[in-house]
Image (cartoon, rainbow, N blue to C red; front, side, top):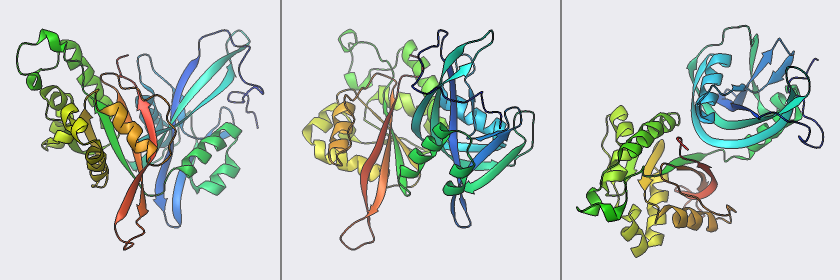
Length: 325
């Protein structure tokens, strides 16, 4: 095979002098007759088999690029569930030499669609992960598939959002609960609307703060549903009973479909750390900039009690920075 386009350089990237090439892709999966199947694409230009991926367009976020590239290369729509991993390698550049390439991969459930051969991809195969690994042309793609297999088979996703910008508390004369988004915050809200929609949210929750409710209002409007308020996700509610707030978030995760929860900066870092500590998940510093998102993946384990009620534990936590940063 001619596989130079994506072939990593042993020892990492140390000879590159140009700006990194940014790309994104996904492990696109569906439920097959005998279990989970993932999509691999064949690119005639390189005569290789790979996971669907492609370069970011100017101003595009990795999550948007992953969804777009999946549609362009496979013909299928998809819903993201979590950021999976990042791969670094080097690629040839025009005029000689090599440049670093950085690819962000997400887990994506296949939606409607049908494959049609095109100039970039002439064949698509749905395969169990074991057979897919054998067919992949590059070791780093196999590593992405390994990360996918380590994800919990039965999982639930909560998108924990810090509200968008609402100005300084000291400059607001009214009730702080009613402090609204600023113009900059409205721009963040719109960017978050575009990002969160990629994850197919089905339910919306918020701390009882106008700025929190305004941040997720466009998503609720898309779904035609109301925003459920939860005082435990506010700063004073959380400080009064952090354990109850953590249980409340697990309860949200246990509902149907992906949920969005909008909260505050005095809640999110400690809440995420508390959930992680309860399952020995190592996260390091828990960031929480305004307009940022934590994608929290909960594993659905059967409880040791009656064997029927799921006991949720945090299995993965991935930070998505403010989309306008």
